[in-house]
Amino acid sequence: MQKFTKQELLDIYNQPLLELVFKAATVHREHHNPREVQMSSLLSIKTGGCSEDCGYCPQAARYHTDVEPEKLMSVASVLEQAKNAKANGSSRLCMGAAWREVRDNKDFDNVIEMVQGVNDLDMEVCCTLGMMNEDQAKRLKNAGLFAYNHNLDTSADYYDDVISTREYEDRLNTIENARKAGISVCSGGIIGMGEAVEDRIGLLMSYMEMETPPESIPINALVAVEGTPMAEQKPIEQWEMIRMVATTRIAFPKSVVRLSAGRTKMNMEGQALCFMAGASSIFAGDKLLTTPNPEFNEDKEMFNILGLVAKAPFAEGEQPETKPDTINEERKIKEAARAVKLAEARKNIPADFQPRKVTSVD
Ligand code: SF4
Image (tube, rainbow, N blue to C red; front, side, top):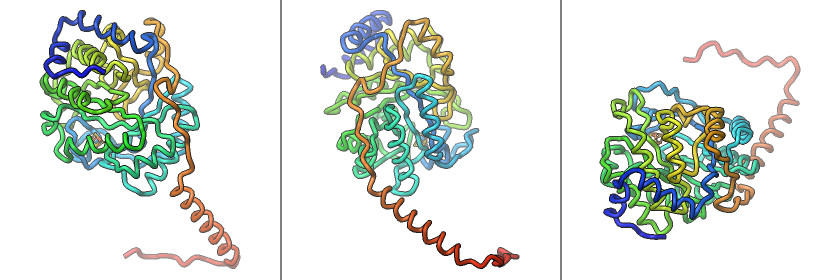
């Protein structure tokens, strides 16, 4: 892969728009089938109440937004949603939990089961669960996780203007932990947060400096949500999205460039230029975690008009094998033993037994 300098990427980004789109389209055609676009679904499996302070995020507990916190979804309802997404043409499911970091608890055990279940549906499974250590990454990998999403969001220089509760370095460590476990990396950013063009290129330079850049790079436009510190940010012009997608495509010819949040503010022509310039995936479904997104049917119509086809899963890598998770297996054995004990104990309760009434909770 060609290594670009920051100045070279800035020159690429700033060249006349149609020149940029043409060059990006040429690179795109050398490495990808330009008619294929992956449809991915993003599901919020645990919403809101997050302790972090990401300035763009309506799920941060400290901001007063319309997001109602919800606890972790059940494994069964996640699998139902996954089947629904697959029936609508999605070949990848990204499950997002509004956590600062993964904790080794029952919720994580359930996420492991979700990953196993979605991988069994022959869909690419991606998770975005906050920071994680190497052992947690290995457990996810064994469960059949295909990709881990952890966005750098912006350049190292602008990062402190966006988030103060964790460091850029923390993010790089989590990405490294996913890599070490053999999980494919999905990492990208958001434009329109008040950053300079240099910061957009700075984000790409962070990936350029990695030994292996992310296999998947989502490019988002800020969806300014009332109650967050970025609520008053002016929406960016769609031309800026096209420039960012095109520059990312030229910088990372083999990666999947995902045209992500902010599509509701773009018209079909703008999105078409993004596909031309190398966007090879969109998120489908009417919600992106908590913010609006075009409906499945609108996207199907757009695909028909533009002659695009939905990409099959695992075109960019092998399907991971799902291995039994020893921690969950042991927990299930313990729970089954407890259930047997409880059933035995119930048998010995006399038929006329009346539980003692609690009259006061003081
Ligand atoms: S982006 Fe993620 S880590 Fe940041 S506040 Fe939102 S849910 Fe929390």
